[in-house]
Image 1 (cartoon, rainbow, N blue to C red):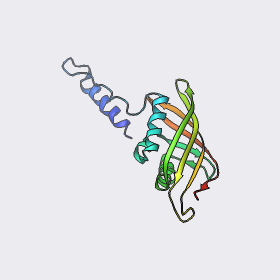
Image 2: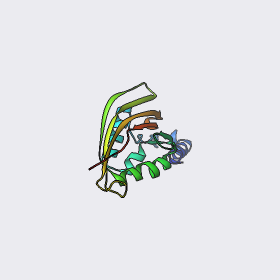
Image 3: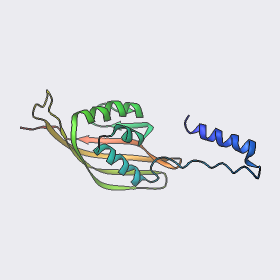
Image 4: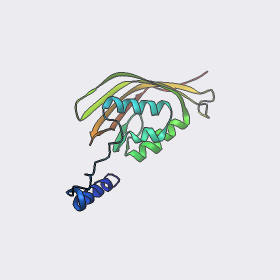
Length: 161
């Protein structure tokens, strides 16, 4: 809906004055969001390490899917609520180590490993740590890139002593 409003305004301007010499031609606003897969991954990585839910969610496609050691999640809202919000509430010191980044003009991928610490909680009174690997697939939506698929493979959590 948001993208259709500027298009409607542009069409209206063109219809009612675009051909008139004294009315400047309407220009399409610059695309918001990353213009390359590398920029998308960097933006997402920064948001994850800063635990910024809004910035991390902005990187996700509306129909993004997450597969991991637990139930699969589908949709931006589900990932934002059940993955990001819950993760940010219980973890600290997330470190992403990219291994490979590539793709073509419309699809891209990022792979790597991650580590994080769990805050102390009932299950882990002294806290815990874990690590795993990730694969992120991105696709170009118009002029910007969005994350379409996330796969996480996590090793068992190790309680701190």
